[in-house]
Length: 220
Image (cartoon, rainbow, N blue to C red; front, side):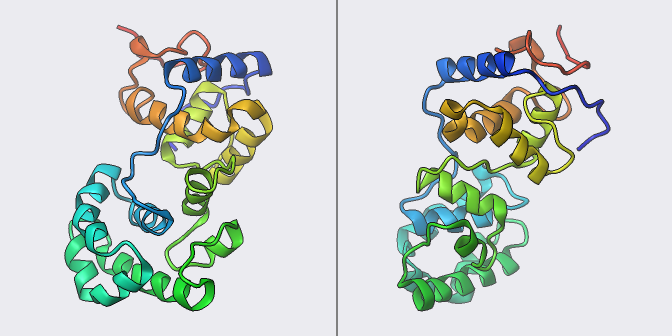
């Protein structure tokens, strides 16, 4: 996070209003990583670490067309995976993780992506955020996958105050009303990515500007 001044935690009524507006604007927000099944989703999210969704989608378009199961990914081989994802940052290590992940899914889970956070985090290349994305998007659990966009937005707005991703994750769970929990992280990611930007937030077009606690709003 930057050294922006941290606002106070918003009250229940204002948080409810913020997410009501998000829901009215886009009732069913979707993640922007392309995938065709649970396996390709977990691979895509793992590949997206320190990379953009757009860049990952470009790299995985041809990869997932020929390797959409752990068995097919292993058959493609390490060099084949690297060739497909070489435009992504840290692609060598990520390719190794994809192969290791595929082998573990076959050996331990009968090629089925597990539906618990602990099991997912036990897969090579999968951390808490990746696990939460998969649990939310594929298994329908109200998990909160906090990234830099959510960390920034949560603290700027006062929706979820916390010094790190785990603290912000807990703050979302504690303060966002239950009816919004399922889509909360998608609304916050999209708002942080396209409106509440790091350097030049587009406050003049923000649908929650009047409720946001950020003191350095850019309104022109």
